[in-house]
Length: 91
Image 1 (cartoon, rainbow, N blue to C red):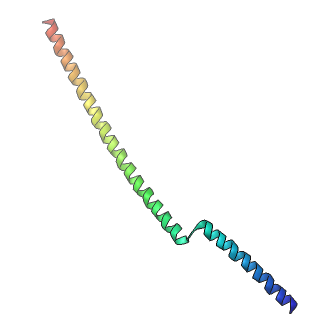
Image 2: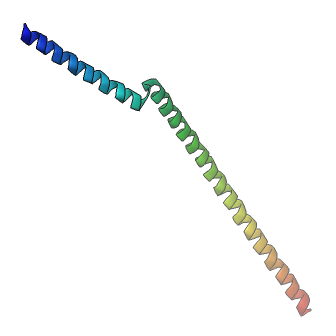
Image 3: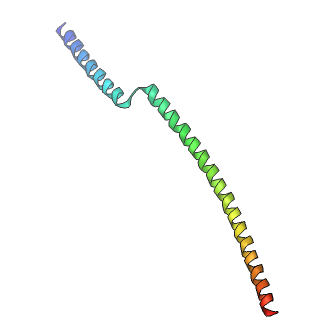
């Protein structure tokens, strides 16, 4: 019977240590439900930010194309003005 009591006491101490370790672990990790919700919110934020980045990059490409087009038009206008001034100067 002593062996049984001793084993029961050892088991009780081991369970107490396990409970303490689990309590510490849960305190450090937080409530699993909260952690899952925070993770889901971070994943949703990442997806939203990725979509916004994609949209911003597409807009940047559009603006760059418009800037290139405007630059070409300005270059052509400058060349036309120079050509007209050269014609006027040589007359």
